[in-house]
Amino acid sequence: MKISIISSSTRKGRISHRIALALKSALAERGLEVQLVDLLEVKLAPFEERLARIENPEPRFVELEKQLNSTDAFIFVSPEYNGAIASGLKNFIDFYAKGPFMHKAIGVATGSTGSMGGIRAAYQLQQNILTIHGFPHPQMLTVAKMDQTIAEDGTIVDERTAASFDKFLELFLAFATKLRS
Image (tube, rainbow, N blue to C red; front, top):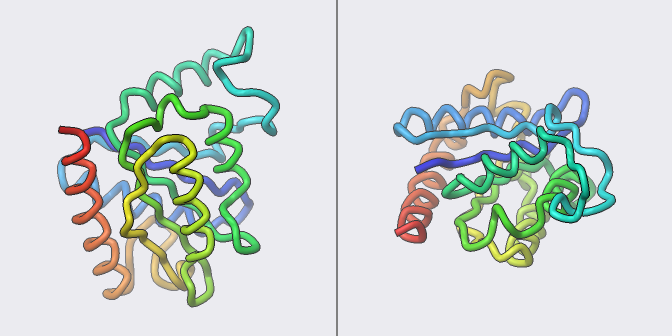
């Protein structure tokens, strides 16, 4: 199974990317094919139109769409900014629209440096997933105090956080596998 992780923070000094790195490592350890799509590197312009409606899109965006279409399941990773998802993730979802995400399992992972773990962003993201005809997994991964529980390289340094990752991935992978078959 191929899983794409979308790391959505494009902010300088971002911390939520640590969640994406930890997920990538954990999925690779389970023998899965993992693609990490880092929106900081993708550098989408502010939304003007969907990719499908652009006359001469940049080849790199067309290539990424092919990679996204070949993905079996996604995990969207977002920090919580002012009670919402990262604007870069909303921009990404709008740009690629429904095509790559339709009828696929999509996991939600959010984080904050506070104690709530980005739960408001997680709920918002599940609603966004429904509108692109994806299947949001009901078990969300919310990482509180992500600056203290995950090292910069994605190593989880807190036992409770590690247990949360394991539970999330176990349930998400079972969900994605059933949807895929």
